[in-house]
Image 1 (tube, chains in turn cyan, purple):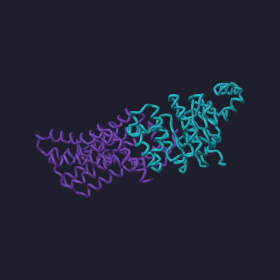
Image 2 (spheres, rainbow over the protein chains, first blue to last red):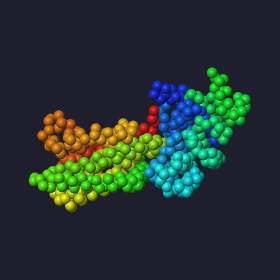
Image 3 (tube, each protein chain N blue to C red):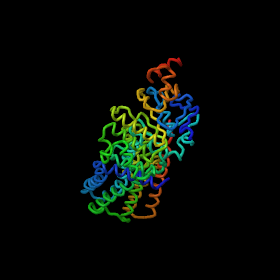
Image 4 (spheres, rainbow over the protein chains, first blue to last red):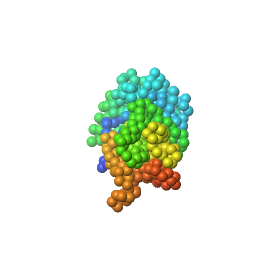
Length: 236
Length: 245
């Protein structure tokens, strides 16, 4: 059995004068893990630490047994930022072919990635002409190139219609079933039930960690939103 | 560093430019129109004024245009998150910079071929040195513009600011490059400043090629411009950080 895919220990991140992460520790195992918490609680900062894009003050972040952001990880971790990080003036296929060349992966994986986000019909359309949801799926497709062992997805389902959200969650589970770890952040608590495991986050700290039903049972709440409130009240 | 990634960046940048027909047309046509305008303006005046000012203009086009295009495109790349994404991939900072330099260097070569073709073929610019060397100077010049554009994009947070760097960084170089007043006739302080500005050497190279064609002099100037370009690329690389605050 592999140990945890991500291990964060006593991580401190300071942005400007604010301590965004005041010494956070957590693990992410294989499967689909939801990182849930209100806007501004430090989810994005934490995710940036996992991909090595964030300057950290102290603490350790290990991904797949290597220090986060180290060279061997750069083809093994897929990262999707909140805003679609793709080129608006290129077509869907051109975007993917470019990133595939940068990653050094087989060009055949381009079509695979486009199909898995259901954009085959828009393959040769310029990204600027796509809808917001379609653009974020192009960005997601880039992260799928080369079948990474860890996918870090920052609010990938925000603003999407319910059908698309359901399809994307099904995709995340397919990816996880194939053996990868998927970390999905969201500020919408009702996405909690779709995860194998949850990390509830508030003001830079993890306030609960475990499968959704276990967290509900432990707090005696009907849903995760209630559980979140119980946990916050208990700490005050 | 990886040739595969550098070429991927260059290819992508060229695809983006190709898709933007208006920019492409401006890049290639505007220099030809401006050099023709210059020729026409001096047409009735005696004294070979076109031969005096033409080379300077040929040195300025690639520099100014590539400076502007690069500062705006890389700013966009920083702002849209694509740069951050690339830096979480196996993308070396130099791969990124050289990819841009290569793409815009190629564009500059085409631009220079057209502008020089019009100047020499149609407008009768009298070049004493080899005409192809004009192209070499133009390309090195374009790479300099690209490198400086990349560098200043790190200090701008909006496209408005990036465009403002043009009067701040480029206009002083145009004023002091020796085109309006010969550099050795300027007040000492200005001459000293002009001696440390790269565009002065680019214009010198062009003028030398047209007037006397001492190739040794030209190559020395080209070398100076190239060193400036490499230094700017190095500084630009330092502004690309994998980890940001």
